Length: 282
Image (tube, helix red, strand yellow):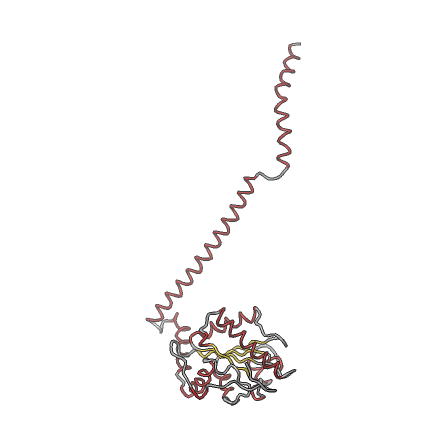
């Protein structure tokens, strides 16, 4: 009897703990401990902070290396590590000091970068031979468009930015030649050419920060200014038909005269060109 009473008392004492366990079970089933969720969030945040700091540190080291290299090459241009910079500077000096060539280029630059040749459909002020001189001697990049397209896509913008950076185009002037194919309305094609040139100019000025006074454009509608099959082959690494090549903007970099005023050639201050069917081109 005494043993039975002892067991009854023991079971009664254990009863409340069993009930407490059953009440906590639903809470555990509802999900993870909130403290664990917070811990995971902190780990992700820390990872983001760590990787961002590492990226910033890497960029800082590259900037510092470039700064030190610039100092070394300024004092010791013949140093082995300075050969790429020295060669590029030497080539630029030779290019910009070729007066026989730059005299012709200066005339085009003077007109285009004063906004006076935004329309040159009859090409009365420049012969094809003079124009081809530009294509043969100025660094350039051809951006092509779809049949009715006038805006640059992501690849076009990357191509343009890489060209500007590689050529140091911001150190001088940029001339854009907007074109369209001969298909369809002449007036419509002129407008396509203007829009292609203008959208390219906006990308250079607004997105890349080039001086608006140093970015000008021309549009060509005269037969002698259309790109030929040979032009298309030479101007692009892609295989293009003449029609595709003429749906384009050809960007010239003239990386000279940094910090100097745009040369003025009064005789090249052009009047608006009459368009077919009357009126004047925009």
